Length: 343
Ligand code: BMA
Figure 1: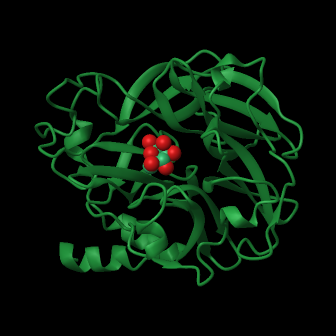
Figure 2 (figure 1 turned 90 degrees about the vertical axis):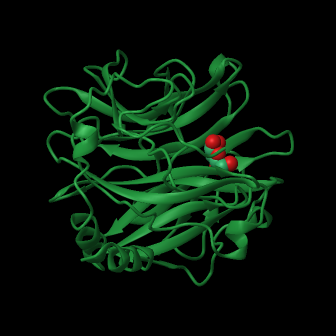
Figure 3 (figure 1 turned 90 degrees about the horizontal axis):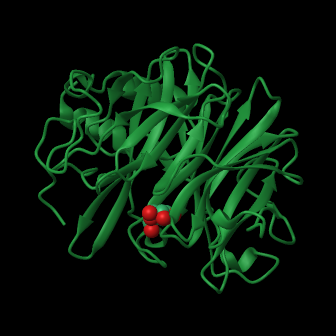
């Protein structure tokens, strides 16, 4: 398949829901200015979104919304579901952009979210069985860090975390390991930015890693800064099933990006920011939930077979594999390209 045919296929993988945006601030049972960047999971046979809600002080908290079909008739918690806790200084300026994964061993959900501390954004972990009571485990790594999610199981006895620290101004996706979800090490770059490309300035994990027989399916956001602001688009990658620190495939093209008015116009226009997905095994479909223009929640649906066929036709990123992941310098990242010429 040539690259134009592949691009054509990639850009048609997802269909937007006809009711988009599926959640808006006006639907909230209490005053909020924006609802966006939701985590997604299934519980009690329903879809649950944990939505970032921004209040009129500019601080965010998380609100659960439940629906039987994952598309309509959302029941929204009457008050914030998880908000800043005075005993956790790192949460001082709010909670943002959660991801959820069901932890097989613990028999509970792990929520990784951004706590906005005075020292910058950090990743915090909370556990829950029901999204009504939560056990906070605090911040995992130093600032500046965002866009994190655990894998649902251990690899060689260790938990693995995908996250996006900013190191010397560079915003690559990293993976780190821990025996106990507290002490983290063996940090390495997993998916670097690509200077010159659509994802040259920042990349970050989108939805939680999705397990397939062929590997972990990873959606990520890629950012290019332009004269009129940043464009947040979505790319695809595949990680090895048993060794998820190995990147097997990566899309050259973005497969989803802002085009509709509700994605182009809002608090931050030009942003499509997926942060949760649900796989409907019966329908063999994937529902991707995303923040649109930092203002509303929207939904796009793809056939799993189409997504897997597409990612398997994407290049193997051997350029990145050959290089030392720790050799990430100020003027060159480990993609082998010089620094991004834009912005
Ligand atoms: C990122 C995050 C997201 C936000 C995006 C676009 O840095 O803070 O929460 O949606 O910028 O503004």
